[in-house]
Length: 248
Image (cartoon, rainbow, N blue to C red; front, side, top):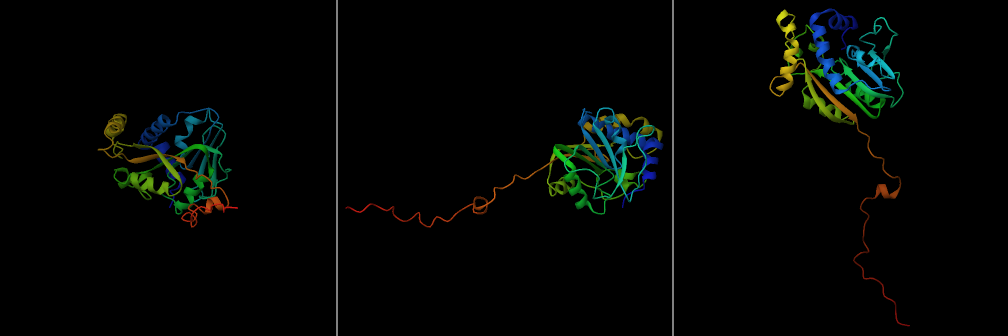
Protein backbone atom coordinates (compact mmCIF):
# COMPACT_ATOMS: atom_id res chain seq x y z
CA UNK A 1 0.00 0.00 0.00
CA UNK A 2 1.28 3.46 -0.92
CA UNK A 3 2.06 6.00 1.77
CA UNK A 4 0.11 9.25 1.94
CA UNK A 5 1.62 12.13 -0.01
CA UNK A 6 1.42 14.44 3.02
CA UNK A 7 3.48 12.04 5.12
CA UNK A 8 6.09 11.83 2.37
CA UNK A 9 6.16 15.60 1.93
CA UNK A 10 6.52 16.19 5.66
CA UNK A 11 9.38 13.69 5.93
CA UNK A 12 11.46 14.98 3.02
CA UNK A 13 10.83 18.69 3.36
CA UNK A 14 10.09 19.29 7.04
CA UNK A 15 12.36 16.97 9.03
CA UNK A 16 16.16 17.12 9.35
CA UNK A 17 16.43 13.36 8.77
CA UNK A 18 14.33 13.62 5.61
CA UNK A 19 16.53 16.39 4.22
CA UNK A 20 19.61 14.28 4.96
CA UNK A 21 18.05 11.32 3.12
CA UNK A 22 17.03 13.54 0.21
CA UNK A 23 20.56 14.90 -0.23
CA UNK A 24 22.27 11.52 0.11
CA UNK A 25 20.10 9.91 -2.56
CA UNK A 26 20.00 12.92 -4.88
CA UNK A 27 23.79 13.25 -4.86
CA UNK A 28 24.06 9.66 -6.10
CA UNK A 29 21.44 10.26 -8.78
CA UNK A 30 23.19 13.38 -10.09
CA UNK A 31 26.57 11.59 -10.12
CA UNK A 32 24.95 8.83 -12.17
CA UNK A 33 22.86 11.08 -14.44
CA UNK A 34 24.22 14.62 -14.76
CA UNK A 35 21.53 17.01 -16.08
CA UNK A 36 21.49 17.14 -19.89
CA UNK A 37 19.64 19.41 -22.27
CA UNK A 38 16.66 18.19 -24.24
CA UNK A 39 15.79 15.09 -22.21
CA UNK A 40 12.40 14.06 -20.86
CA UNK A 41 12.81 13.11 -17.20
CA UNK A 42 10.01 11.43 -15.26
CA UNK A 43 9.66 10.22 -11.70
CA UNK A 44 7.06 7.82 -10.32
CA UNK A 45 5.93 7.38 -6.71
CA UNK A 46 7.41 10.22 -4.70
CA UNK A 47 10.48 10.98 -6.78
CA UNK A 48 10.06 14.76 -6.98
CA UNK A 49 12.77 15.49 -4.35
CA UNK A 50 15.24 14.01 -6.84
CA UNK A 51 13.97 15.83 -9.94
CA UNK A 52 14.74 19.46 -9.07
CA UNK A 53 18.28 19.50 -10.62
CA UNK A 54 16.74 18.61 -14.00
CA UNK A 55 14.21 21.45 -14.14
CA UNK A 56 16.58 23.95 -15.73
CA UNK A 57 17.86 21.92 -18.68
CA UNK A 58 15.42 19.09 -19.35
CA UNK A 59 12.97 19.35 -22.22
CA UNK A 60 10.26 18.18 -19.85
CA UNK A 61 10.06 17.02 -16.22
CA UNK A 62 7.06 14.98 -15.03
CA UNK A 63 6.30 13.93 -11.46
CA UNK A 64 3.89 10.98 -11.62
CA UNK A 65 2.08 10.31 -8.33
CA UNK A 66 -0.21 7.26 -7.98
CA UNK A 67 -3.84 7.71 -6.98
CA UNK A 68 -3.66 5.75 -3.69
CA UNK A 69 -0.80 8.01 -2.57
CA UNK A 70 -2.29 11.33 -3.63
CA UNK A 71 -0.68 14.29 -5.34
CA UNK A 72 0.76 17.64 -4.32
CA UNK A 73 1.74 20.62 -6.50
CA UNK A 74 5.46 20.66 -7.27
CA UNK A 75 7.80 22.50 -7.48
CA UNK A 76 6.85 25.28 -5.08
CA UNK A 77 6.80 28.72 -6.66
CA UNK A 78 7.06 27.38 -10.22
CA UNK A 79 4.76 25.94 -12.86
CA UNK A 80 3.34 22.63 -11.62
CA UNK A 81 4.75 19.44 -13.20
CA UNK A 82 3.23 16.82 -10.87
CA UNK A 83 0.41 14.61 -12.16
CA UNK A 84 -2.05 12.30 -10.40
CA UNK A 85 -2.25 9.05 -12.35
CA UNK A 86 -3.34 5.45 -12.25
CA UNK A 87 -0.55 3.26 -10.95
CA UNK A 88 -0.37 1.19 -14.14
CA UNK A 89 -1.74 3.66 -16.71
CA UNK A 90 0.37 6.77 -17.12
CA UNK A 91 -0.60 9.77 -19.28
CA UNK A 92 2.63 9.46 -21.30
CA UNK A 93 3.04 8.28 -24.86
CA UNK A 94 4.98 5.08 -25.50
CA UNK A 95 8.74 5.54 -25.71
CA UNK A 96 8.75 9.23 -24.71
CA UNK A 97 10.88 9.11 -21.52
CA UNK A 98 14.69 9.36 -21.56
CA UNK A 99 15.25 9.07 -17.80
CA UNK A 100 12.85 7.46 -15.31
CA UNK A 101 13.27 7.44 -11.52
CA UNK A 102 11.07 5.23 -9.33
CA UNK A 103 11.16 6.09 -5.61
CA UNK A 104 8.52 4.86 -3.11
CA UNK A 105 6.72 3.27 -6.03
CA UNK A 106 7.78 -0.33 -6.58
CA UNK A 107 8.01 -1.65 -3.01
CA UNK A 108 4.59 -0.24 -2.09
CA UNK A 109 2.79 -1.22 -5.30
CA UNK A 110 -0.18 -3.60 -5.21
CA UNK A 111 0.56 -4.58 -8.85
CA UNK A 112 4.34 -4.56 -9.26
CA UNK A 113 4.30 -6.65 -12.46
CA UNK A 114 1.88 -4.30 -14.21
CA UNK A 115 3.81 -1.29 -12.89
CA UNK A 116 7.07 -2.59 -14.39
CA UNK A 117 5.33 -3.20 -17.70
CA UNK A 118 4.25 0.45 -17.69
CA UNK A 119 7.79 1.57 -16.88
CA UNK A 120 9.04 -0.46 -19.86
CA UNK A 121 6.37 1.00 -22.15
CA UNK A 122 7.15 4.67 -21.56
CA UNK A 123 10.94 4.29 -21.69
CA UNK A 124 12.35 5.27 -25.06
CA UNK A 125 15.17 3.71 -27.11
CA UNK A 126 18.44 4.30 -25.31
CA UNK A 127 16.59 5.44 -22.19
CA UNK A 128 17.51 4.45 -18.65
CA UNK A 129 15.44 3.79 -15.53
CA UNK A 130 16.61 3.97 -11.92
CA UNK A 131 14.76 1.95 -9.29
CA UNK A 132 15.37 2.98 -5.66
CA UNK A 133 14.08 0.56 -3.01
CA UNK A 134 14.65 -0.19 0.69
CA UNK A 135 17.54 -2.54 1.37
CA UNK A 136 16.32 -5.56 3.30
CA UNK A 137 19.75 -5.81 4.99
CA UNK A 138 19.87 -2.15 5.99
CA UNK A 139 18.73 -0.34 9.11
CA UNK A 140 16.26 1.94 7.33
CA UNK A 141 13.92 -0.88 6.30
CA UNK A 142 13.65 -1.97 9.95
CA UNK A 143 12.32 1.34 11.23
CA UNK A 144 8.83 2.66 10.52
CA UNK A 145 9.89 6.20 11.40
CA UNK A 146 10.86 6.78 7.76
CA UNK A 147 9.12 5.90 4.45
CA UNK A 148 11.72 3.19 3.84
CA UNK A 149 10.24 1.09 6.63
CA UNK A 150 7.07 0.41 4.61
CA UNK A 151 6.44 -1.96 1.74
CA UNK A 152 8.61 -4.84 0.57
CA UNK A 153 12.37 -4.40 1.07
CA UNK A 154 14.68 -6.01 -1.49
CA UNK A 155 18.09 -7.52 -1.83
CA UNK A 156 19.99 -6.50 -4.96
CA UNK A 157 19.65 -9.97 -6.44
CA UNK A 158 15.88 -9.95 -5.88
CA UNK A 159 15.51 -6.53 -7.50
CA UNK A 160 17.70 -7.52 -10.44
CA UNK A 161 15.77 -10.75 -11.03
CA UNK A 162 12.40 -9.00 -10.92
CA UNK A 163 13.48 -6.36 -13.41
CA UNK A 164 15.02 -8.92 -15.76
CA UNK A 165 11.69 -10.77 -15.91
CA UNK A 166 10.21 -7.57 -17.35
CA UNK A 167 12.82 -7.10 -20.08
CA UNK A 168 15.13 -4.69 -18.27
CA UNK A 169 18.90 -5.15 -18.45
CA UNK A 170 20.93 -4.19 -15.37
CA UNK A 171 23.60 -1.55 -16.00
CA UNK A 172 24.91 -0.18 -12.69
CA UNK A 173 24.31 -0.81 -8.99
CA UNK A 174 24.55 1.78 -6.21
CA UNK A 175 23.81 1.98 -2.49
CA UNK A 176 23.00 5.02 -0.37
CA UNK A 177 21.91 6.05 3.14
CA UNK A 178 24.72 4.66 5.27
CA UNK A 179 23.91 6.99 8.15
CA UNK A 180 21.61 5.36 10.76
CA UNK A 181 17.94 6.46 10.57
CA UNK A 182 18.21 8.57 13.69
CA UNK A 183 17.28 12.20 14.35
CA UNK A 184 20.03 12.61 16.93
CA UNK A 185 22.21 15.60 16.21
CA UNK A 186 25.46 13.61 16.03
CA UNK A 187 24.21 11.37 13.22
CA UNK A 188 22.73 14.26 11.28
CA UNK A 189 25.94 16.31 11.52
CA UNK A 190 28.10 13.39 10.37
CA UNK A 191 25.78 12.15 7.59
CA UNK A 192 28.07 13.28 4.75
CA UNK A 193 31.01 11.47 6.32
CA UNK A 194 28.96 8.29 6.65
CA UNK A 195 28.02 8.45 2.96
CA UNK A 196 31.66 8.83 1.92
CA UNK A 197 32.70 6.02 4.22
CA UNK A 198 29.90 3.74 3.08
CA UNK A 199 30.75 4.31 -0.57
CA UNK A 200 34.19 2.83 0.03
CA UNK A 201 33.05 -0.23 2.01
CA UNK A 202 29.54 -0.80 0.67
CA UNK A 203 30.11 -4.54 0.32
CA UNK A 204 30.58 -4.72 4.10
CA UNK A 205 28.42 -1.89 5.44
CA UNK A 206 24.85 -2.15 4.13
CA UNK A 207 23.20 1.08 3.04
CA UNK A 208 19.57 1.92 3.62
CA UNK A 209 18.53 1.92 -0.03
CA UNK A 210 19.49 0.03 -3.16
CA UNK A 211 19.68 1.78 -6.52
CA UNK A 212 19.67 -0.21 -9.74
CA UNK A 213 20.06 1.47 -13.13
CA UNK A 214 18.57 -0.50 -16.02
CA UNK A 215 18.12 -0.13 -19.75
CA UNK A 216 15.22 -1.28 -21.87
CA UNK A 217 15.86 -4.66 -23.48
CA UNK A 218 14.08 -5.08 -26.82
CA UNK A 219 13.98 -8.51 -28.42
CA UNK A 220 15.07 -8.65 -32.06
CA UNK A 221 12.07 -9.38 -34.32
CA UNK A 222 12.02 -12.66 -36.17
CA UNK A 223 11.51 -12.82 -39.91
CA UNK A 224 8.03 -14.04 -40.83
CA UNK A 225 7.41 -17.22 -42.77
CA UNK A 226 9.08 -20.60 -43.03
CA UNK A 227 12.61 -19.37 -42.33
CA UNK A 228 11.55 -18.28 -38.82
CA UNK A 229 9.44 -21.36 -38.09
CA UNK A 230 11.75 -24.12 -39.35
CA UNK A 231 15.21 -23.68 -37.89
CA UNK A 232 16.39 -27.28 -38.59
CA UNK A 233 14.72 -28.59 -41.76
CA UNK A 234 14.75 -32.34 -42.30
CA UNK A 235 17.41 -33.57 -44.67
CA UNK A 236 15.94 -36.94 -45.61
CA UNK A 237 17.43 -36.96 -49.13
CA UNK A 238 21.03 -36.27 -48.19
CA UNK A 239 21.93 -39.98 -47.89
CA UNK A 240 20.72 -40.86 -51.42
CA UNK A 241 23.32 -41.08 -54.22
CA UNK A 242 23.43 -38.23 -56.66
CA UNK A 243 21.68 -39.01 -59.97
CA UNK A 244 23.92 -39.74 -62.95
CA UNK A 245 23.09 -39.29 -66.62
CA UNK A 246 22.32 -42.52 -68.52
CA UNK A 247 24.36 -43.26 -71.65
CA UNK A 248 22.59 -42.43 -74.90
